[in-house]
Length: 295
Image 1 (tube, one colour):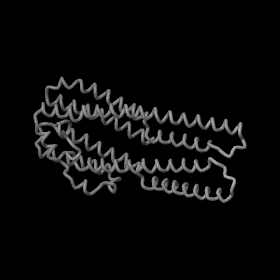
Image 2 (tube, rainbow, N blue to C red):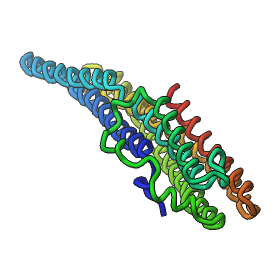
Image 3 (cartoon, one colour):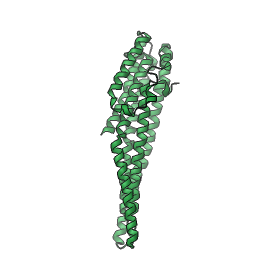
Image 4 (cartoon, rainbow, N blue to C red):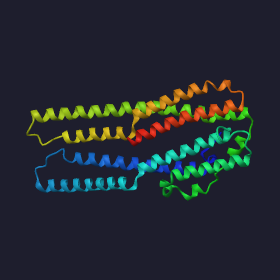
């Protein structure tokens, strides 16, 4: 069993910064969309009294002002960039850590413990420089943690069979399970939200039909349903359920194929290559995810 606290400081710092930025970004976008929908709701009924209309306009203006401020916060705080870059930092440090623990490429078995630690620290420094643009978002309390943890050394100093078993259980199986769960979850959410888009678009059509036959009506739901449709579609674009599902399915399938080769591992060199292939497969999934988010 391995926990987040068993990984190096820059993994923990990047992970925490990414999670916090993601929560803030999604929260602000969600409330921005909710406020836009609330503003549209106020326009449903055409009030006959001028004073009532004035209060509705004032309330609508306040709602739109808050939404405007939220949009400015999203733009200036750059939560999305920290979310992506923090995730990339964490994944880079995690991959490096697994290669260190399993004695894979650049941390081979013939190295002394001191030399392996020195190499690992140098690579962490390189990663730190690569992601120096998000240094201000990393917590000092996370950065003061160990670069090489006791768990990393314990796994590295274990036998080939123990390292192999540990890697298969805590990296390969764990990641396959995570990919499978995420792929199924994203598929379900994509279908639910897309059906929601279709439903509100249909309601907008019905509203237009109602106004055609009742042009004198004081009720107009068209603005509300079109705003809801645009908001739901924006949420789909934000979460990228369909793209994520495909990326997770691809990575899970590739990793499952690689796992089937584990039974042929009978030497340190074979295990080192196995780990390298596995980590490259997981890195490709993350690179694809990051590229999709940048589009």
